[in-house]
Image (cartoon, rainbow, N blue to C red):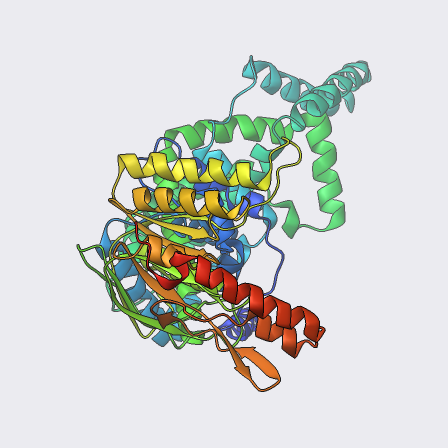
Length: 535
């Protein structure tokens, strides 16, 4: 009883809070990596995931108790879910768990036995390449039987002692050769048995509500009992034993091949019931993830569910970025075109397109947005934001960028549901060619898809007039101070404060006076700055 109270208190301490813990994304991604193989669904690509800082966003949302719950959340955050009813049911159940503390904790308490790092290897066992059995498995059974029987007989007849010693040496060699080879499978099978036990307990959860996931587990009570009995005979959870017991078992493994024989029998059981085990895995993992979402919703008050429309438009109010402390929200009404966003450094351009990308992805993966309301088309998000020189392959920053943009062009020729996020397009080349290339590329991408692009080139506002809606961010100058309000402004950016900032920073007057004169001369000679030259 004390144990249950302690567990409940622990769960209460975690509720509605971000959980600070180490996350091994290599292990967390196991399930996702297996599920995307041969899948026809659309997923967030690695580049976009990295550009939009989704490991950090995952960590903020992840309040899962179990490793398999983390793996499930990681997967659904990558998946563009086409079936809106799936998304709605998850949020509806999350709201049930928010209100019913007893119900959610009755599910979470059994999951506390699935926190060990080895739980991540369950997905390897049931989704990866099917565990292989060594050749001639009967030989291992024979050697195990020979070692055990000769040890027993040696107490009655000393002649058998030599046979016991010889078979023990052979078995130690076999154990050494095969234990390393099948180590991850041993871990996976041991933790699979923990999952079966947790599933049995969860299946007994009492509630008057009809919860689809619990119904599935209840319908599998008999198979869960059988699997537990079969796997439980062979798989020993060493983490629950004292040091002496573990030492005895390890000695038995070396001399009598206990683990190896258990592995051979368990593989047969796994093969026989693989489909049912996979379903149990996904049901339990989904329950854990939905409770995790419930905790996130409970903490994050400014959340909404999206409204999807068939027209290629976006509208949102009070949209903000989930990982920025004290974020500034922005609103756009009825954007039916692509968007060209200008402004100085640090004014908020890049953060804004990331904010849009993050929320449109969350809308389609977990049916949540950080806004007061949002209406959007189902765009597939592709980004080109973080770009660096690739020194290992001797590629310049500019060449790396044009390779990425080329992929966008190829995608745009195949489908018409993309939203391309491009930060400071072609900034790695000279002004004339940058303007020319940017105009041609953005025009092409905009033919059937949508683009959110940031730039310092205010000339693009005129080159792309009537094809892109223009927005800008601007620093605010007040006397000898300047600051950013991070609010997006509709329309052409007609002013620049760069030279004013030099004055504020006490640059020599001869520099700022000359800079102002040069700027005035360039404006007179450059018809683009006045919007007279339109392509």
